[in-house]
Structures are given as structure tokens and as C-alpha cells.
Length: 436
Ligand code: HEM
Ligand SMILES: *[C@@H]1O[C@H](CO)[C@@H](O)[C@H](O)[C@H]1NC(C)=O
Ligand SMILES: *[C@@H]1O[C@H](CO)[C@@H](O)[C@H](O)[C@H]1NC(C)=O
Image (cartoon, rainbow, N blue to C red):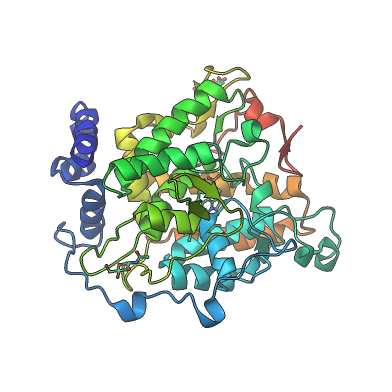
């Protein structure tokens, strides 16, 4: 699997090696996606380009407690749980408030403590969450919560919907485990056919789930959405950055780190635990909704090896190198198999195109610039905040901080929408996050 995937990637690149020499260079050196990404990151940090295999595993700082205050406690009916297994598991173990509603500091600290997420990434994710799905300061990891009573935040017109109600704003189609909203009727329930497909690929690979397997799973589901979901929409932020994160997070965060496998090894038992799935005596799987658990005796990313925005950019670019369709912004136009892609050049006034999106930090730049630019519309449409200006100031300053280490091209004119022909985009009630 791992060699085949690189061979395909190299073949994809062969015709355009000179267009992005750094990436091609790295990929042509061979090895697994994990090794290639590590080499690219090392190079970025001014290193020799050789992966730091000496990164020492330290059981003391990497062990994640699942006892005492962090013992597993199932959610009650009033507790919010949603589409994100990482956040659900954190809330079940007291690394986030058990009710599933948290503030920025709680999300930044919690994702660092449990998973080793770098603060540039968690800061961006939480501020965006609170801006479009919450009250600006806090947000729900599931649906609307009593803990975010709109009256308490002053002069309000609506109720924050949480990330479960954020389809096309935060939540995307082609999730590894959750269904497409239009097809499944909700975007937060684990769909066992999807999960089983990923599980089976892991079992077939000596019970090991790799980035290559996750990309293959994503490719299969991407094709399935085109073939089965007339409302499939692959948005410039949700499709280009959130969707790949949902896949790479599975390996980067859920894998168990050890001295033998400092970058992590992910087997199906660990996957089941984090996704709240039980293996029965006969080998079949049963989901236990809301029961996502951090496995016992499990180790997170090493201190100093946090997963950051540049790292996510690298994994996302490598995945798109092998499967260029991942960067197709667009959707089905109301019938299955009618996928129409938008011209990135046109969308961005000539700043980005499908080739240069794979260069440098461009991919993360493009997606975040888009999220930033549509934020005023999303806030207005959510109607949850009296004061759009202050919410935007917070978001803009967080994006400036989080993306400070990236070199992003300047946009010369506003990004254009052009999404109205996609019913998956235009038939969504933006206040409730449901289809009309
Ligand atoms: C503040 C931090 C985070 C935010 C705001 C966030 C938000 C989200 C959102 C909105 C989704 C739905 C995306 C989709 O439609 O596919 C999602 C899915 C997902 N998230 Fe998170 N997340 C965060 C941290 C994490 C962490 C630390 C993990 C660790 C493993 C994680 C793992 C996942 C996975 C695997 C999915 C896909 C689930 C599935 O399709 O079954 N996330 N997250
Ligand atoms: C993680 O790896 C360590 C070292 O190999 C092992 O002792 C531990 O049981 C593993 N944890 C899980 C949850 O598999
Ligand atoms: C972009 O596409 C729109 C809609 O198809 C078209 O009207 C416009 O002329 C295009 N702009 C450029 C710069 O190609």
C-alpha cells in the first residue's frame, strides 16, 4: 500500500515536476506519506530535510490520564456531543466541560493536553467555531445548548447552533465517518458503512491504519458523494481544509505514540475506542453513540512535535498530489454525477490555481482567506451576535496570529462566490443549518 501510493503520487507529478520542484523533490525521495511529510516539515524548519527519527519518546509527558478526574463518564441527555470524535472523547473524559460547551482557553488547553495540537491550529479552529457556531467566546461541540442561552448574550435574534448545525460553514460532505447531510438527514451520526470500510482496510493492512489508507478511504467516499448525493458540495474552506483535517487527524492524533513508533501507530482497537464502536464476539461492530473514549494506556504526540497549521497543510498537499480531485471546489448541480468544478483562477482573481495551490503554504492560505472573507455573511445569517464588528475583529486577529508563520499571497480582489448553482449550498437554511 505504502509503496503503491507513492508511485502514483510520483506519476502524477512527473509531468509537472518543474512546476513545483520542492514538493516533487520530496516525493521522489520515496518512502511512506508519513516519512515524506516529516521530511518536508524538517526542511521547512530549516533542518537537513531528514526526518527526526531521534525524537525521543517520553512516556511521562505523553501519557494521557483516563482515571481520577479524567475517568470516562458517559454524557447525559443535556450534554452536547456532535460530529467530532476527538472533542466528544475529550468531553467524556473531563478534558472539556462535560456539557460539551467550552471557551477558547478550554479548547486550546484540552486539545494540547490530550492530543498535542499546536496552538496556531487550535486557536484558529476554536475562534472560528465560536464566531460562526457560538456566541463569539464559547461554542457547542454538538447542537444548540442551554448553556448558551441567547438572552444572556444581549440583544440577540437567534440561538447558536453548535458545530452539528454548521454544514458548509464548518461541517463538510465526505466525512470519514459521518454522512453527507442531505443523504443521511444529519451530519453528526456515525454511519457504520463508512466506518466499516475504513476498519476493513485497516484489518487488511495488518491491523494498521496509515495516511495512505485514510486517503484511499477519502477518495472512495468522494466518488460516492458524486455518484449518490445530488446535493454534494465541496466548499473552498470546508472541502479544501476541514475535510482533509478530519482524515489526517485520525492518524496524526489518534495513533498511539511509543519508543518504537514515535510518529504513532494506529490499530483498529484504538480507532474503535475513539469512535465509540464496540467489537462483538463474532467480530461484527456496533456503535455506541456518545461513548467515544480515550484508550487506556495511550500516548499522545511528543512535546515539541505538535501538529500545526503548516503540518496540516503538508499532509493536505500530499493527499491532493495523489488525488487531485480533492481540490475540486464545486458540487453536483441537483442530480447525481453532475459534479461541476469552479475555476480557481476565476474564483480568486488569478491569485490561485490548481497547480500553485500545491506550492508552499498556498492551500491553507486560500482556505483560511475564504473562511475569513465569508465570515461576515455567516455571522449575519446565523444572527447570533448583535455586534458583527467585534466578532470579526477577534477572528481577524486570530487568523493573523495563527497564519503568521505562513507566507500567503495577497488577494487582489474579493473572492467571488459563484455557488448559487449548487443546491447543496443554496438550499441550506443558514440559520438552522438544515436543508429547506
Ligand atoms: C478545536 C478543535 C476542533 C474543532 C473545532 C473540530 C471540529 C470538527 C468539525 C466541525 C468536524 C466535522 C467535519 C466534517 O464534516 O467532517 C470534525 C470532525 C472530526 N474531527 Fe474534529 N475538531 C477539533 C479537534 C479535533 C481533534 C483534537 C481530533 C482528534 C482526533 C479531531 C478529530 C476529528 C475527526 C476524526 C473527525 C471526522 C469524524 C467522522 O467523520 O466520523 N478533531 N471536527
Ligand atoms: C501504546 O504503545 C505502548 C508501547 O508500545 C503500549 O504499551 C500500549 O499498550 C499502547 N496503547 C494502546 C492503547 O494500544
Ligand atoms: C469568471 O466566471 C464568471 C462566471 O462564469 C464570468 O462571468 C467571468 O467573466 C469570469 N471572470 C474571469 C476573470 O474569467
